[in-house]
Image (cartoon, rainbow, N blue to C red; front, top):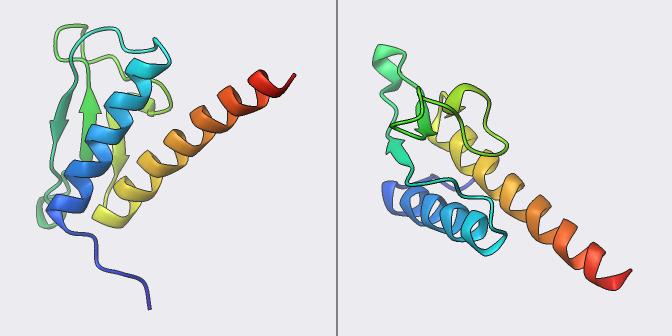
Length: 92
C-alpha cells in the first residue's frame, strides 16, 4: 500500500523542485503553487504568475496532477531527471 501524501510532503516537494531549478539556472522568476481540490476537479498546479501562466520546466500547462500522489510523483521525477542529467554531464 502506498504512503498517503500530506500537504507538508507536497510543500517540501515544491520547495525542492524550485531549489533544483534555481541550482540549474532554469528558474525564470517566482512560481505560484496552487493546491488541488479533487472534489471540484481542480488539479495541483505550479506556474509563473506574471508570464501568461507559462509553465516551468517539465510541467505542461502548469498542471502537476489531479491527485496529491500524481503531483508529488511528477515533482520528484523532474527533480531526479535534472539531477541525473547534471551528474551524467559531469562524468563525461
